Length: 387
Image 1 (spheres, rainbow, N blue to C red):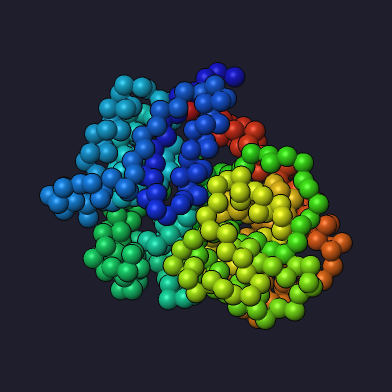
Image 2: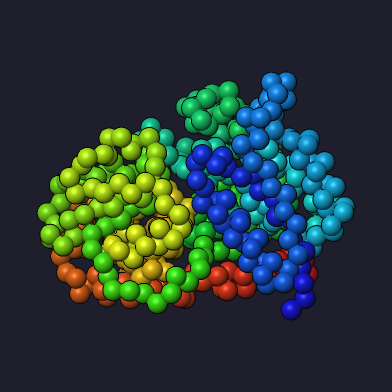
């Protein structure tokens, strides 16, 4: 197979908030290079902003709309390296969608991975004031997001993001050759917002094979940021209410965040803090069930794929994409403490059923989420747009 040259563009999220998007970008760069392709990264980081002098920081509000620096940098990168394709991930705030035009003017096709819902929701989550919200879906001007100050709780910053969406609406519709979407749920929302369905390619996340599965463990595990959007408080409330067998009476919480203090010293809860990847894998293998109790529409959390790889069934919340992702490899419940408590009782009532769904989880991983399958999909899509 002939070698491709791929320019990968991504605005990394701050290191203080671990990001699955950053992990995915690093993984793809590694896998493509291991497959023999030439990868030319242009990676900026939001951590840069704190080091800027005040005068430069004053220009930040316009960067999401048009980043002159990124436009110049990407133009030089394309002129020097002549990539076959540009793969864009997160353009905000330091790249801006203007970099798409740079590539198109030079005749280089652009693909983008949609890690969230930001094309149709400036917050990226379809979540506001404690409940799902699709008020901006399909709108040219995301006026409701401005009214509610959805972007970082700021109306001025929300005006910038609404302006960005309006200015670049046609660019998103016509200048991106393919969109990688994580789930069918996400694809349906993006089609309703006006992105062309014919340009969408389903691209589930992949993880390295952790090895042959071990027997189902005990109790449940949560992995993620400890904040209300991720629903960890709902899960803890549900755990208190559920009547569970003694073998499964421990919930391990992996991660950190603003709710950590209120979760301390709760009976039956073990706070593991942040763990390295090997530690996360061990926590999953030690449990019988992974719980993803999000209040928001998730993209596709890496922990879901990691759980499938480790042959661990999942309990996820309804309303978003996750029930469709896990299928028969787990259970789903509404995002409420009572519903989650009932689902926990059902899941832990029958160890034989846990074992059965564990096998299904592993089968789903092998069928859809391996790294070789991801590389093959990326290569096929790149070649399709280059042809």
